[in-house]
Image (cartoon, rainbow, N blue to C red; front, side, top):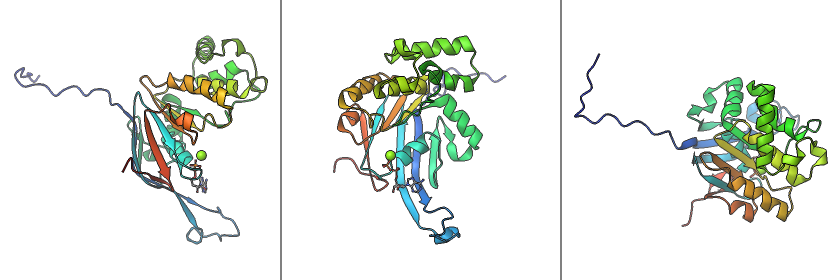
Length: 253
Ligand code: ADP
Ligand code: MG
């Protein structure tokens, strides 16, 4: 066995990386029209849209990033890449140290299940299930036992202020309540990264404000990325990234 020389400082232990997601020179192009008869069937015939153009961005634990920019500027496209729902045309996206383009779709699903929580503008809850079952759903996929799922979902619903609505179905809840359920569901697997696409877009001002209070509490040792064009929503961010025509607008001057 090799002897450690105590006079030589040992290589310092790497601290746990504060970077949870990392986009490098990311471009995402879409082909318009699929195999539409309007655009012909050959790929090269079809017009392309550059939804993201050379975007570089690191997301760190403990921060809330506000992703701003007008409609069509590429916010949802970037969130889909960060959420490993999609992969870039060029450049790389790493989430939790893994290059999402190098993963199979099954591996990306796994990555989402362990690391990422997603909140959509329109809640995306399953209408036939109670609030509690909706929250517990990712835990079913994770293979957690029934009692543990119940306990965790109950805790999370209490955390978002819906302890007394656990047995209600989405249709019996207000928009703000449904979004709280969706947030609780996104938190179920205790993800390191929360991605939220216009989470207050469907809500009135007062309800939106109460949802923002929930978001503010989320970024302790995780990261939150919220896309919005709503000023109050963006105001809870520690850092703002502005997109315009798929490019990051340089800060300040
Ligand atoms: P935002 O969320 O900021 O409104 P998006 O990321 O949804 O912007 O869209 C960016 C650009 O990419 C827009 O021009 C949009 O039309 C285009 N786009 C988005 N998704 C697709 C798609 N699946 N197919 C073709 N074009 C798309
Ligand atoms: Mg969008």
